[in-house]
Length: 361
Image 1 (cartoon, helix red, strand yellow):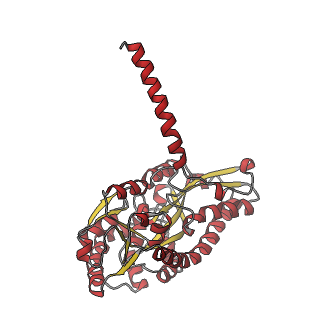
Image 2 (image 1 turned 90 degrees about the vertical axis):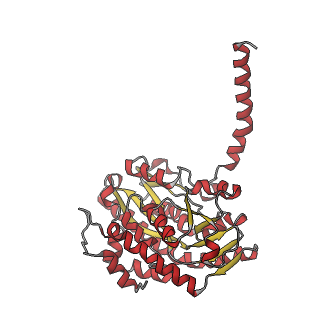
Image 3 (image 1 turned 120 degrees about the vertical axis):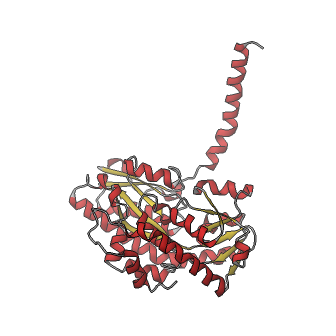
């Protein structure tokens, strides 16, 4: 066969492959039609692209659309927030880099990934510190402690405004996990975060760092056998189709931290800056109230589908708490580190939060 005929055949094959693969990829692409804006944003004077990796059925993720609509209303059509959930812009570490460079303007970043640019955000991932909805409410109401937490990325040119949540962390697994001994036989996926890696090392568990978009295939192929995540997220994003068991650990609250590029924000006139902040705060406060009930509803729904839920013994939980305290100590220096923009400058921020929250190892 001569070169010309081979080239023609190659082009033909590529064309056929495109016809076969293209529609398949198109079918898998997430649709935002359900959350389409009820207004025409073409006349907006200011626009910002905001990313999130997860599904907007989760209240804490839907917050982006709620912010979009309320911002349009209160800014009288001057600001359009173009919200991109479903990992449409990539994994969180990748998107964080886009945000820092100004390629996008905002992000509802998960608390586990946020530590990559703001180590202080790792505070919320420390085991058994802010590990219930009630404790989260207490932390948000703490004033200077919460405000200092939200300054974690300020030195990176990124401002933190507020938080929404996605429930209590535990273990979704393909095999029943009734104890720490069972957990040590599982290969867990954890987020791309230093605190999580350290914590699982201290617990003596086998953890694989993996971007969230890679999880479905890894689960189906048996590359991983468990997820460090919340029951709400596992049910809504259909991880329970593979993981038929869930073990309550409730060692931390999962957050989405709403962060924005400071350089972009500063292009807004003062009155719109004020409006922007007020909208984010008001929407996040409303969504947080809805999240607690959503977790209960999603657990009930998963149980109806046959997912089995287990509790660890007090002895095992005490062991996780004791070993997890090593994570507190090891990460304290990063959490306590101060930066030029910090207005509150405590000598030991982590200790202040631990005392305020009533934490005991």
